[in-house]
Amino acid sequence: MITSETVQLENARVLLRPLVAKDASALLGFVKEESEIWTYSLRQLQTTSDLNDYISEALRLKKLGSTYAFTVFDKLKKQYAGCTRFYNIDDVHKTLMLGYTWYGKEFQGTGLNKNVKLLLLEYAFEILQMERVEFRADVNNLRSIRAMKSIGCKEEGVLRQNFAIANKRRDSIILSIIKTEWAECKQLLLKSIYNGTNN
Figure 1 (cartoon, rainbow, N blue to C red):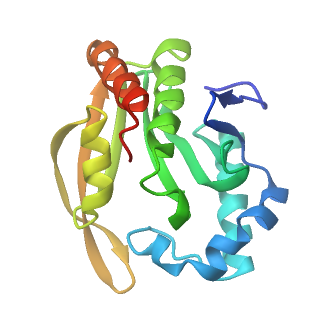
Figure 2: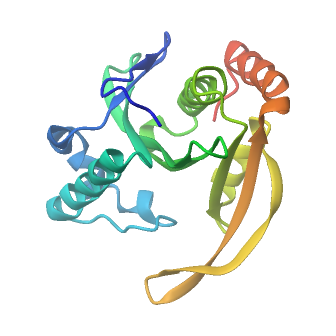
């Protein structure tokens, strides 16, 4: 369990800090103006109320110890870029999932995501001492799948028809990184960030 209320992760490019209710005002533009962000999302955020409910649910799950959500702040652009979170945190089996990640269009393909993933994975494996970090995505979300594979995630399989979204069923791909793979993945991420590989 992440016991601190104020886990803050940052490097030269990005600042991750705990999501709080007042962040809604900084994130509302993405909901109102960039509907394509939610194409593959389990939640279709369209209104201020949708966003407030999204944040409230994340904070409720945080109190239960199963989720820790962050806002993503791009230090180069000096703007909020989106959100991400740890969820399904399991202290017994030392596993968690990393997801609910979304960014505004102008932040996609800029290298921001690799910096975010580096900070989160460092925290998961090196501070929380997790044994496994799992990722999931809609099988049709090829951009997200490419991004996960580019940081060293291994594909494990597909959960067929496991979610209902907008009157249809979704197949979800499962990928993961395990603790013994982390050192190699970290070097891959650092090299990619150093070389300016966008993602």
